[in-house]
Amino acid sequence: MRTPAVLGPGTVRCRRLAAELEEPTDFSGYHLRLAPAERACFWETVVEVDGSPACFAHEWAADDKVLRTTAGRDLADALRASLAEPDATSHDTTGTPDGTMLAAFLDAEPGHGLTARSTLGAIMLGTERGHAISRPPETPALLLTQTVWTAGRPVLAAKYLFPAGAPLLSLASRR
Image 1 (cartoon, rainbow, N blue to C red):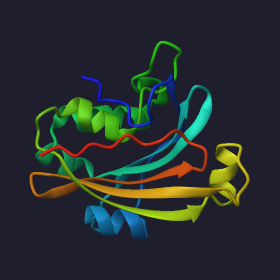
Image 2 (cartoon, one colour):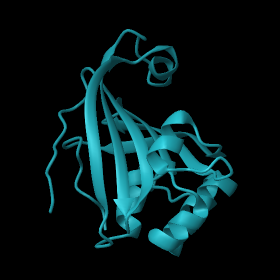
Image 3 (spheres, one colour):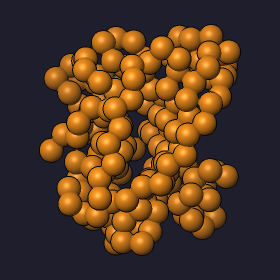
Image 4 (cartoon, rainbow, N blue to C red):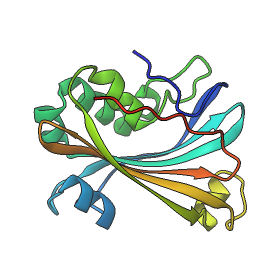
């Protein structure tokens, strides 16, 4: 099941910059309620629409044990595979990693009762993120932070940056 594109029409490709197991950061530890000994699966991905960077994603999944008990074994196994062997991650026909971590959650858990809370803010890209998407550091961007829950537990925490000039976002709420 593929979710509708939020970045409008066009050819969407993802470029995975990092996939690793991390100690809790201030952001992931807080939003995912991680204990100091727990680890979060982290993906850093650039989403391009028609060849232009449209979104810079930092996504963290809850500790493997939490995912297995709340979101299911298939999702936990898919995320774990992305860490062990980058080539084990699902890819599109061009060999590009197939989507964001949020897309993996939605594909793995249709009808599983995922809910989310989000906030929006305006920021500048900064040096590291600007370099990753070939834009000046002072480029304005929209920052969407999101925490996804299932079975009463946060399972995904993310920061999505949409630089000025990115396609319009198409958002729809579901109940």
